Image 1 (cartoon, rainbow, N blue to C red):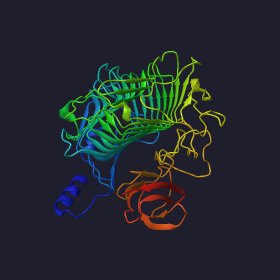
Image 2 (image 1 turned 180 degrees about the vertical axis):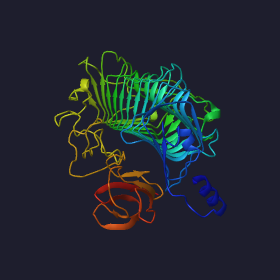
Image 3 (image 1 turned 60 degrees about the vertical axis):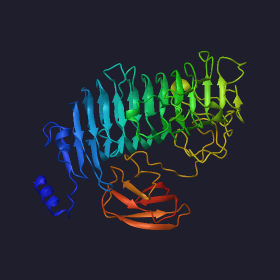
Image 4 (image 1 turned 135 degrees about the vertical axis):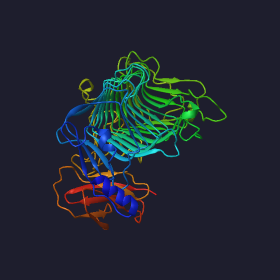
Length: 498
């Protein structure tokens, strides 16, 4: 019946199918995800029931629409595992797809592979991966838990990445743009936790926890074959990447700038790296095309070193370290009270040198600092980030490190990072005034509902009607700024930038 309606709609080109829930699994109408995806329409939910499903799926051209996303998720309370296969799933040219609550494990190629079909003329775009688990690669080479190639406008939220391949990454991005990687945990990676290269740009890496993540926890840049750059005119491996409010434990080097430009690393805590705190490198060398690694910043970070660290910063050839900005970092050598300080390539104003930041309990992953810490209130005020590792507002002036010693608790800021308990807004910021609004899954509200948008003073500036749990909201008529969106008992902030 659904296929007949779809044919009639195609012939008439003037109707929309009602959203449907496609049940997948043993005893369900669809035996596997590929079968359901083949008939899925914009707005549908592909609901996977409890089972361990074989990997090796290929799903091309799965496309929702701006106000009718396709959701792939586990049934309430169900454990859904995709096990084995070269890739668990390879999505080619997907758009407007939201994946929630799935586990991918023991693949031999990449855990989950998303690509643009080999041409950046039609990138994969508008994808959300939320509360998923990527773990236990059954490979030792350059194999990644989540592989993204030519993906624009994406978010990775509250996911677990665990036990990656010895030569691979947790998330590997080649030519990806306008992304957010927020609130995830990475543990026991091989080469990297996150690699961002091949012309990748405007990716925000915020409030993640990294533990023992290989050679370079963040490989911001790298070395990419010229045929794989997206776009093919890019003059950098990575640009305008933001690394905010993260905690790093171990790894040879937590932060590596590699052929990267205009990267901002601020308000992070780097705890006992194995060899260096920072690397400044250039692996793709062609002065006629590529910019040298430079014009990057490292500000308001806590760095705790140990006897394993003989040099805080490793600087390679063909780079421009003299263009870097270092400011207001706390550098503490836990095993050398007479340490002279890091070898920063430029002068660092307001450095806090070899004073114990008084981290509360790093052995149990507690990186809170007290108001008496030498890092408290010693940071330079920045417009971004606003939230610390614990999702609390930074004070003004802020503390150094990932955790604010004197958080601002009088302002209720909901960053809408998950849909389980709060209002979800994507993208946020909304660069064109169009964003998707999704109510919490267990809201239990009756529709229609009023959507009220106010400015920060509480003045109502717009009202719309919400007909279902997810819809697109158009607010491009409002001036740029931050607004509060209210639906029933839920509220969240959205930033509009044009």
